[in-house]
Image (cartoon, rainbow, N blue to C red; front, side, top):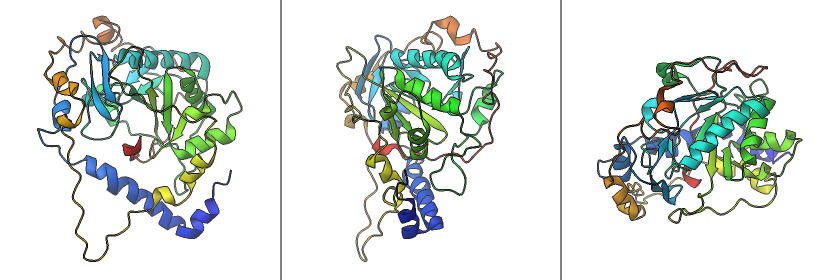
Length: 358
């Protein structure tokens, strides 16, 4: 699939296009997300809460505009996973999401030859918009899984904070997967995750989607669940469906039929997604900065979620019970599966996602 590479490079030139990509990622959404939120904003209020509410688990609203009750925490350590960036306090989710992550970590060892998951952001204790990094992840049904395999030992909290992301992309090339880093076990892990009925979408970098379209020779039934998106070169983003009975959860439209290896993917390999914003006309008034999202902009129930009574402690709300919160913290990690994925690959640049259109 050529996907218009020649046309793209003729139009912009290789360096110009690469610069446009960098500018659109670094100077746009990500820079805006770093602005300190006001105390009264939705980001400020939901980001200040350290524990979830008591009561049943319910996602409220949409993936990018909502909150949640009754969240549970992914244990920081498991036999086949380790939670990353613990200081962010973003390993909370709907029990259905946490259960799926634990299942994927176990099945990945059994069926994909993957030594274990490094799990990134899931959601804040009561969901809601985050200070930085994501537009979605607000109702406990989204989770990030690193493409870096779990090492053959239990990392310290400091190591989990400092371990850089590893890009799957080849430096100095336009949307090209690095053959020195990419492995078939990563492809198997993606398709394993997509095989679960409750998984609705998996966001990956467009280059990774193209790689899967070009090379995956197994069952392609669920290949359409892999959706190309900005960033997502060092991790993949799992999104599950609204759980049964979650009346307050707003579902997303199903993915289109087919494997997604079509014009919708080809678009990512044209100049259009990476073009910088058009400069304002001479004399035009500068655009107003976007207004902060307030709690009143979220579903009405989210105000009550902020005021709800907290659980007693993180241990009490950890998935699997209080013992799961600490039993494996000092235990050695499981031995990795045979192959080259047990070692940490070379570190690439920290990716900048552009997630607002998820």
